[in-house]
Amino acid sequence: MKTDLKGLNALETEQWAVDKGLEPYRGRQIRHWLLNRLARSCDEMQNLPKDIRALVMEKALIAPIEEVKTLISEDGTRKYLFRLHDGHLIESVLIPERDHLTICISSQAGCAMGCRFCLTGKGGFKRNLTPSEIVEQVIYVKRSLSDPERLTNIVFMGMGEPLANYDAVVRALGNLIAADGMNFSHRKVTLSTCGLVPEIEKLGRDTTVNLAVSLNAADDETRSSLMPVNRRYPLSRLIQACREFPLPNRRMITFEYILIDGINDREEDARRLTGVLSGLRAKINLIPLNAASGAEMSPPPMERILQFQEILADRHFTAMIRKSKGRDILAACGQLTGTYEVGGRRSEVRGQPCLAAKAPSSINQETKLLGLRSSSFIQELSR
Ligand code: SAH
Ligand code: SF4
Image (tube, rainbow, N blue to C red; front, side):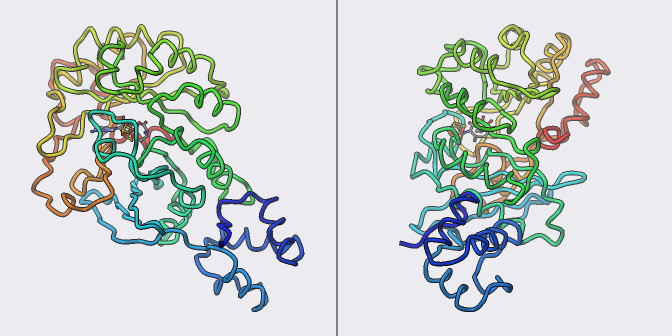
């Protein structure tokens, strides 16, 4: 079987070269071509003699995913659909920000966690991605850019639960942030989880990337009804793991809270949320539910969203409203399904008003400002 080199670390790549009868420095050269020069074929490895290129071609898997289609949203967001070697489909989303680009990548084909509001979850679980399938999403998209250096931020918020594919994700993280790998700043990489407690604990020991937790409710009953994972790891355990998560200076944990009409958007929910998070270095991202057509749940009216935010702000929490991008191509949170069945029919996806523009005059200036500053959650993550 061919070796999947983009999933190996530096030492393993050297060892692979040695096992093939090459000098260790050839391993370093190949790694440089793959992760720094973003090579997707051996022909690109110009400083390698022809016989070594032929050997790499024969023994190594260089391009583990292939593009099926790319959709471009009216707001510039791009959604890439990729096929894996066994036919499964995954998606990555490229999000333009004011001064940089963020890529949202998948860690699994499908997801087994079954969150009620999430289209990825509804499609069920297909399989875990390999480390190189995770890294390759970034390589492929970066190669497609006219100015690749603008791609500085990575979020694990695509398809799948990254901590349910722990070893592969940590390996991929290693190659994404290694100085002799893709050299992303660990401060600009964020992993989002639905709350797998033992893996959150491990992650704190194994990496220094940012943690985001999809909270979505501040009491066990509501959270369990939305997210089955809460029955295994209830809020008290999850929050305890967050309190113990080793945070570098000035870093915070991001808590994502999807606002769903009539389910978790009452004033008492907001107050309870501030209680649950009290004492934590936390910032809260409020995400009005992205509903697909025919969905059983809907986002609250804008006024209630702003009220919710105001309660959090009054209690000194940084609470941003995340304006979803790429809705018209179903590239927003929870809309990634690995198909384009609905993506092409723009009329099916209802647009939503700009948060700041629709702010009612009754809300105070501070809340308005927060609304204005919330042009994108992901943009905010990278500050
Ligand atoms: N499995 C991980 C990461 C992928 S989901 C997790 O759950 O955190 C990425 C984000 O999309 C999560 O914050 C999730 O709560 C959010 N999300 C899922 N479905 C959504 C929907 N319908 N509307 C808005 N956000 C959604
Ligand atoms: Fe999986 Fe995250 Fe969707 Fe839940 S929200 S089903 S954990 S991808």
